[in-house]
Amino acid sequence: MTTLYAFVTGPEGAGKSSFLYALGDPADYWVDEDAGLEYRYLAVDDSLEVYLFCSLDASRFDRLLELEQRDLLGYIVMVDSTDRGTWAEAQAMMANCRGFALLPTVIGANKQDIAGAATPNEIAVAVGGLDAMTRVQGAVAPNPDSARNLFLQLLYSVNHEIERLDALIAELERLAAERDST
Ligand SMILES: Nc1nc2c(ncn2[C@@H]2O[C@H](COP(=O)(O)OP(=O)(O)OP(=O)(O)O)[C@@H](O)[C@H]2O)c(=O)[nH]1
Ligand SMILES: [Mg+2]
Image (cartoon, rainbow, N blue to C red; front, top):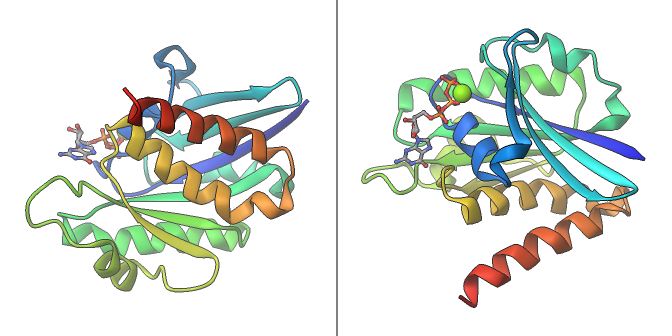
């Protein structure tokens, strides 16, 4: 069994918990108060499982540092597109992650449903998502389709390196197609 991880970071209130919760079965989302982490578990098949995890205290990165770099798919940096005052912090958090390991990163330009939200392009400029390792994706984190699409962007960035991820991508895309047809 291969176990891979993705680390979710971002300023307080950006939408990290909403994203993790919306990403799948409610039973596979949980909070570990003792560890100071929250988790989203995605079983792919009997050879691959993925955990997305996030510090309850947004300023903490210590649990990230305990991981083997090769087990880490990359980062999702959640940004509140309506709260300009938090963007510099989001940028610092992304730099923090990449200081640990330079890995694919998806910036979630979240809260796109709110009038006046900055566009994903504006977020890319402000937070620094303009290099080859980084994608910026508009999102509405509490919406399951949007949450899945955000995570898919990270998988698309790493897929060529890890063959089994094709199964996870297919499953997430299948769920999206199912909803489109109902
Ligand atoms: N309208 C709208 N509200 C959102 C969206 N994403 C999150 N929210 C709301 O924003 C608030 C904060 O969202 P959380 O998911 O708790 O954010 P968080 O990053 O986990 O926050 P902390 O755990 O405090 O750091 C909640 O009231 C959410 O319902 C979004 O895309 N659109
Ligand atoms: Mg939270």
